[in-house]
Structures are given as structure tokens and as C-alpha cells.
Length: 320
Image (cartoon, rainbow, N blue to C red; front, side, top):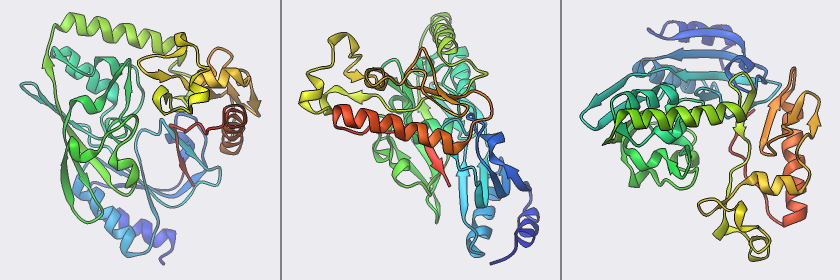
């Protein structure tokens, strides 16, 4: 295996690829936690991205691909290998069909469609992160998910670049085939939209952003909700029977309801804290660590498991 310096030299020779050594990953996560990556590289060019992956693979260097870092918890030890980011963020519209690069900010994509009077993504307004990650996790809000509008996803499967139809992506609630194949890298997505009144779409999007910013201020170091909400039909019958009707929204029970029952609000590990006003919101109040963050998450899962007999599932992804 080559040294970090030798690998840096190999990567630096790839056109259109920016490479750095010993980069703190806390800079690239919304939680603001995470130790250094031995190597960090980014590009908006697919060929450079693929060349970097193949160079690392040929030399036995572990590789991790990240996006906007909104939903990432990176170990305090960092990552021993190469961390790659694809920055391709082109947005194009042809009639009702919109193509978006995986590196485009989701809010920018929402604004792009709303400004053109294209309906279908306005309820995703205010969700942080990048488009590729939104496809990966089938992001959604207010009863709608991005998968409802996806026509084609273009991705690299480790051997070649392919395209999947919506059905082939196997979307489900906060799920997709890409979550089960973490080595597959999304490059772009084509979305099928509908024409609608631009002013009404803008009103809806702006109202949602205001609501989100009250719950999740843009300056807060957090990932939004930590745990997935639960489908009422999937809960153990004895648990479902105790959920009040007013807690059920569109067939889902907020994870926050279960967390509230076990006293989650205000719990703290070091500078990592559960919000006093939202039991499913954990944030870094200063100089929190990934170790404290993971400890608090496990405590919350254990409390809910002991009380209700099932495990909450994280929306966040772990690195290291």
C-alpha cells in the first residue's frame, strides 16, 4: 500500500481533481464533529471522480464518498483513507423534465423548479443537504417524497455508469436501493414535474422554510430529525393501541412522540443535547464530540426499546 504522500501525488495528477491531506471532516458535516481524513478530494467532473476511485482501488486505499454532510456522524478518529465528494451541480429544465446534478443543494433545486412554475418539490423546501443524498434517502416532508417525481437516476455501480428507472430504485419510506448498495454513487437525477401556478408554489415553499427555520435554525449544528418516523401499521399492535389518534399524521407516528414518553427532551452528553422543544432533535451546542453524540443516540434508543419493545432507526449515517 502506498504512503499518504505517494497517494496524494497519484491523485494530484488527475485533471480537475482538488486533493488535500489531513482534512478535518468536522468542516464538512452539519453536526460539526469528526476527525481528519487522510486524504480528501473533490471534483465536479465525473471522469475525474471515477479516476480517483479507480486509483484508490488499484492501490488498496479505502474510499468513502460523502455529499453535503447533513446526515453524517463522523468518528472523532476521522477516516483512514480517501474521502471523495462529487460537486456536479448542474440544473437543467426541458419542458416539465428537470435534470439535477447530485452535488446541487436540494434547496437550490426546489427554488429552480418553483421559479419555473413546476410542481412536485415545493414541500421539500428547507430540507438541508444535496440532491444526491435526497435521492439516496428518499427525502420528503408533508406527505410527499422526492421519489414521487424521479424518472431516472444515473449512478456508478463500482464497475460502470448505469441508469435506473423509478421502479428499479426500489423506493420506500426514507429508503432506496442505493442505501443497500452504499458503494453505488449517484451522479444525477431526472425528475418529471407538473406545471402549476408559480406564485402559489412560492407561497407554499416559503411558508415551509419559515416553519423549518423555527424548528431547525440554519445556524444550529444538527441533522434535523435523528430518528425516522414510524408507520402506524408496522408498530406492534400493543404499542399502536397506546398511540393517541392526534399523534398520528398521514399514517405515521413521529419518533418524537415515543421519545417524549421516555423523557428525552433536554438530555445531554457533554455539548451534545436534545432540544428542550423537540425530542427528535439532537444538536451540538458547542464543542461536542462524535463519541458523545453516539452515546446519547444509543441512550435514547435503549429508553424507547425498554419502554415500547422496538428499536428506533436512525436517519443519520455513520462514518468510521
